[in-house]
Length: 216
Image 1 (cartoon, rainbow, N blue to C red):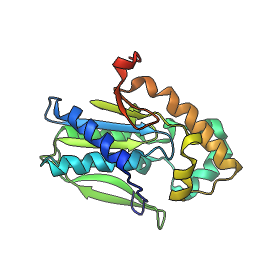
Image 2: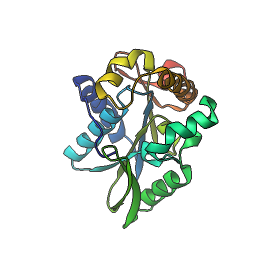
Image 3: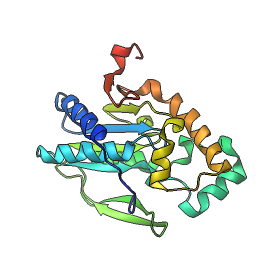
Image 4: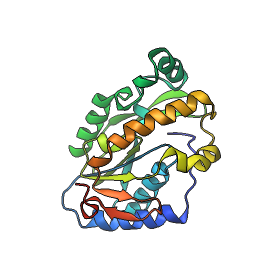
């Protein structure tokens, strides 16, 4: 998203290195890497670092921020949620048809592709014209990214209770009672997707194979 704040630390770089090493061992002409986790867990930073490393090795990646695919605009989201109740919050808020369409276009090596792009400074919903031609990698990042059709799913195992500092530093939303209810609901939905992960990033930001943890 345009205007997003990145707080890249050494832990994100180290985790990205481990993930790219894993990705380099994968076969296939078109590979989708999904990075999911709760608010403030470092999804955007990690996704950026994975894409940066892939570019550095000569294989550029496109990044899909699935927060660009909400069914509601940034201005309308909280009113819609409050009207429909906290239980309405979850991955069903996303336009999965558009997400899957763009992922399909990536797999098809399509040119002249349109992707949504939210400008956080203006809250405008822009449209980005781009191309997937010749790109081998797509990095999908967001709360519910591991729900997407992906070849490698990465789950950051940090809860919103453990990422309060990151949320405050990024300052994307006021932390009031309603925001805490939203974070709790997102926590419940995001945690339900954890079993889909191939890789788990633990609380020390170490990358672990989910199957070695006995979780798949």
